[in-house]
Length: 291
Image (cartoon, rainbow, N blue to C red; front, side):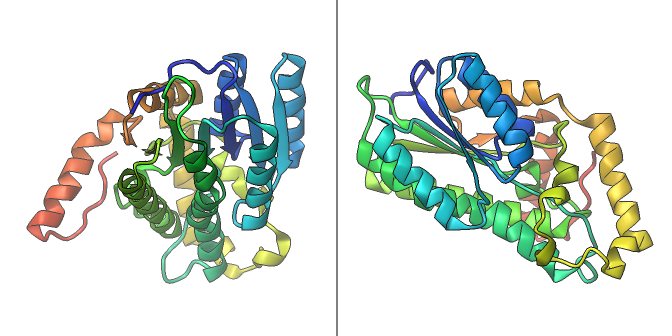
């Protein structure tokens, strides 16, 4: 498959576009000449970003939606299929995180993370992959790209965030299957899975977008010493070892253009990934990741 090297007039869809990696992708690709469809549940930050980019001459469609609900994504795909010549890149980037003890954390946390991180990626695939397959390659023979933001936690079991790890393992597996099925179909679409470790974003503040009726903020677990310890540990890691988002996005775009499937932004974790595989083959018990 031929790989794109220019973003001029390329159609780019980004979910989770208002913050973090999604925002950096939007700004970087918009200024490189792409037309953008930006989607996020965070209207307060999405709308100003879209207006800012329009002021810089970028063609922007902005849509407030929750990726856990398929209808908004389906409507966006239908609109772009009617208004754009092509959709060249889809970044299924929306994601949320929680921390907790697997037998104490509220079930609603699991529903939230699986709905957003796993089903959000699946809903995005179901909305856009048919369009990307049907449109075929571009005039230069280049394939389109579907990029899932998974996590290093889709390759390594991190003990602090059980629902996050499970949801990201599932998102990665779905993307692996997507790539195999695209190959079987001979489709001019390449799937990619981004597996970053800690990137300096506001991900830990994601609960501000959570629907009030979807959980009980007064649940005693959120006031427990266990929850507070885990939350404080996550915040400390974000502040002290988080990679600048600009550096992560540079790696992501470089590797997408190379056709890389597993995009690892933090090579210092590669030995741990290899160790996990060896442990599986050896039947070893899980061990904590050395950070």
